[in-house]
Length: 442
Ligand SMILES: *Cc1c(COP(=O)(O)O)cnc(C)c1O
Image 1: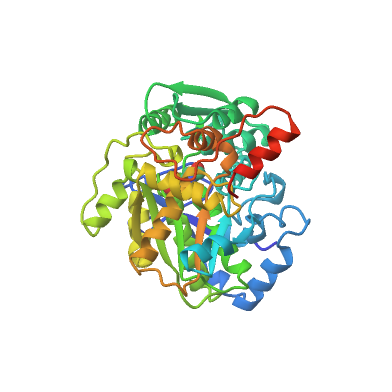
Image 2 (image 1 turned 135 degrees about the horizontal axis):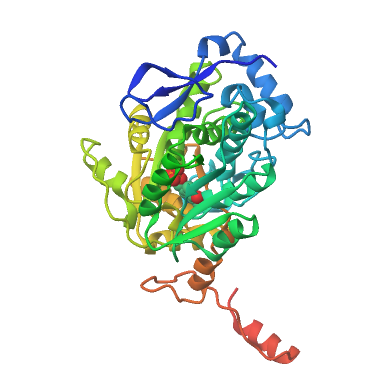
């Protein structure tokens, strides 16, 4: 395969260029975030129609690794990685679910849920992690010394990191805020053999420490400050257009915490437009939990200023972040996409999540945050009833069964539990059961 050119570039200086084979996470001159930049002129040598055809012939097929939703777009993602170093578990290719019943309730017929949580480790973090771990294998093959890969996590990044490291034969170390991740999220890295460090701090505290540790050791940093992750995550946008037969939705709504993903979503759409595969851009919405809403606060102020804050407990634990690493990228993207930031209270996210489940999903609390944002924007008539809307569902509900069962058992403090559904404990007697069924309203 032709090796298309890409490099690291500072987000503040388009003239900066750093070799993609170096281990750097920030611009060595200014400390600003980096992004992977692709040689668009080179990519334009292939026509838009021909790119579509190439991506479509690979999509969901078995020719390894190109059947993966990420590696099927390898030329646009990480062309510098040799196929033999790719660590793939067939990521992406997730269902774009037509939420007909739920959409009808709200009056928006063209509503779609991109089920990114139906994946190897149960969240969309697999998309970026396959790229990062493959790059680590490439770096090692090229002679770099890396003794382990580490991340701070609110649960899903650590699950993806440890699974991909285990598959690659690499050591992983994860830094988790103690008692702030779900049991399912804690058990995933344990099962995959990661060193799990459970720290008495929050995510922002873990993030600070992991950067210091990685700076001092030959340990590679896997958080989304590392722009290789963004390259994998951006394939969500490409895949959505592909699933719509290269049509573009009017809106894409995603829950945001560390804000790498809202940035990635934008990057994917921009690349599609710059390379001529699509003609217009969607509007993007980033949805935050009210208890962890620094971007929302900045949005209210038209992004004139930004202040990190101390995030407080939210059921949407994967986005309980007060000092997002990718804030500058996110703000840049939201400005380009005429973006909106919305927020959801605990009551709202729990209610939206349960309400939508009644139409057949089993969604996570973060998806509940995005669904709340959707409903609010429809009510404000910002989203029109005829618009084509995609909500990104970021994790599988089965990772958050504590939250979900406690909702139904009415154990969530301060939440109204409007859609709670209790198990009926009943004697194993046909008569009694028939009587009970007759007395219930269905
Ligand atoms: C990581 C994550 C998010 C948010 O992504 P960011 O890039 O941190 O903004 C949302 N939902 C789930 C389930 C996640 O794991």
